Structure formats: structure tokens, C-alpha cells
Length: 237
Length: 42
Image (cartoon, rainbow over all chains, first blue to last red; front, side):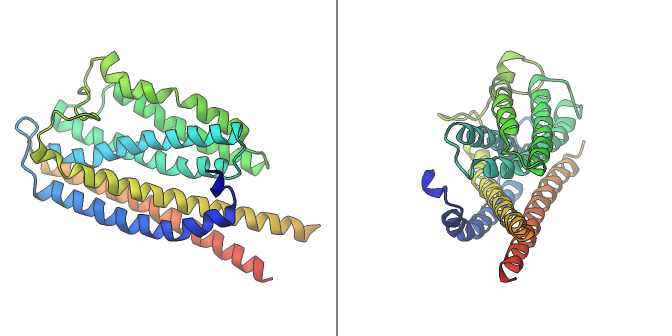
């Protein structure tokens, strides 16, 4: 990671990576969604609404992965003083917040025909909503700290403390058995039939690549803004 | 209950928000990099 500590070296890798992540992500996400909408059979219980799975699961994963990235960047900033860590943390927040919002919206739309309600204060739904508000708090705090010329240490501590919500989201379906179904996809296997499941890896990888492209674009924007601010400070002396 | 309007609404929301994120990230990156290039040339 410290090989990328030099912003010039990072930018040499980030510039082509941004384009490739976008192209590969768009192609895979489109293929996965098209296959999910047209090539898979309806579920025996949920019928056609099961097709929401192909966008809901990647957005849930990326909503949580975004905060994991913030927490990892915050630790890297506070412990190893990695010069790009604060930039990476701030750049991950808008993408994470967007996918947390997509997860909440698609979950609510899925809930209406499946459970008969748009919303319930169920453990999984509520902890995901808390994650979305944590993102908004992090974005506001990090922006305010940056405007004051701070190093972003308070936002980094907030990023680490906020990570406590991630295991709560993950285990919420076990701790509070209310409305949301238990985990049906694990590392070792899945209770969903392969004839329905197979487009999911395409949208998972596709949306993850698009998430990566958005984070790299935000990092490049922050580095360019920092360059302008530094030059303006030198010129005003 | 016809499920297709729900499926369509979920896909439209997901695609629209993802596109908005990517367009906003791209526009802010282009604006910041153009400003950095302009100030370097001065």
C-alpha cells in the first residue's frame, strides 16, 4: 500500500484503472441485469419479484463495503499516516451512501409485493438505515474538517467507531428474527437454486467495478483540488 | 398484484442513482483536473 503513497505514482495507475473499471463494470452490470430480467425463471414462491435480487444484493454488499473501506482508510491514516488514506476515506463515502440508499429503496420496493408493506422497523432494515445516516454524518464531518484545513482525524475516528454497525447489520437477521429473511447466500453455498442465482455474480462484480471507478474519480478530484489549493497558497505569499 | 411495476421501479431507481453517482464523480473530477491544469500553465 505504501508503494501508492506517492500521489504521482497513484495517479499513473488510477487514470487507466478508472476507465477500465468503468467499462468492465458497465458491461458486466448490464449483462447481469439483462440476464436477470429475461433469462432466469420466476421463483416458485416470490414469482417475478425475485428479479430485484440482482440489484438489491450488490447494493447491500457495496453499502457495507463502502464503510469497510472508510474504516480501513481511517486506520491506515491514524496508525501509518498514509498520505492518501484520508482522501480514500472521503472518496468512498458518497459511493457507499449511494449504494446504501439503493439497497433501502430496492428493498422497500421488494417488500411491498412480498411482505405487503413498504417498511417495517425490522433489525436488518433499521440497521441499514442507520448505516445510511452514518454516511451522511461522515460526509458532513469530513467536509467541515477539510474546509477548516484539518487532517481529518475526527472523521477518521468516526469512521472506525461507525464500523461497529457492520456486524450488527450482518447478524441482525439472526439476533432479531422479525421480517427480513435469514442469510440465503454464504461463502460456502447458497439456498437459492443455480438457475436463478447465476446472473448474480455478474451484477456483483459489475457494480463493484462501477463503485471502484466512482471512488477513483473522487480521489482524482480531491488530489487535483488539493494541488490547486496548494498553488493558490504559494501564489498569495 | 402485478409484480412487474415493482421490478421495473427497482431497476429504474438503481440505474438512475448509479448513473447520477458516476456522472457527478466524473464531472467533479474533470472540473478539478481542468482547474489544476490551468493553474499549472499560469
